[in-house]
Image 1 (tube, helix red, strand yellow):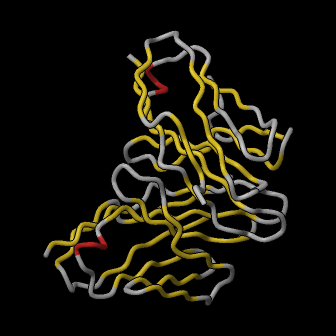
Image 2 (image 1 turned 120 degrees about the horizontal axis):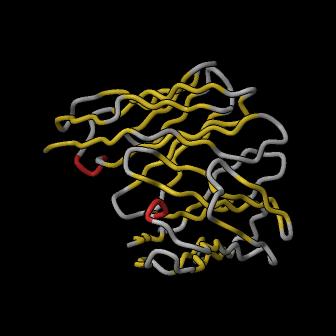
Length: 111
Length: 114
């Protein structure tokens, strides 16, 4: 069974204080790893897809990286508007259409 | 484009009542999903569909039913509501096929069973 574990559960940062979120996964074969952002009372919003170890993607202050066992979401010089819950999801290999999600990391950035 | 639309946004049910959560998408996506989200537990897959007429169970299907008569619509049915079904429900869709594409989510339905 696919497993996705995110850490830490919560992260409190000062504005400008860079940090990283971790997503560890166990799948039979990775088809894709997804990062989402979720604001309170809203549905998850897509950020990145990573397909293979060594791949990196960037968007504004966010950078996602992937190894064979985990992914990191780096937040560089965060601003209060980066406060949200960040979710990681995996899709296993061919023939599996499900997306398995981790519990998320709630990031709070103080001004 | 409206994307994925869920109705209602909020609902309070009494134990034993039934209801249908509606989900429709206008992106012509093949794959559709229903998740529930409980505090600190992440998203748990209830049911999913890879196309009209095809549905399958996810991790937590007990107490729920689905149908997929059209590409656009994927309603979730609760037959005998129980307090354990108090949760926020999200519908999602994605293009799918051979590529691992991102899913688009609705705004959610917050359900309370009392």
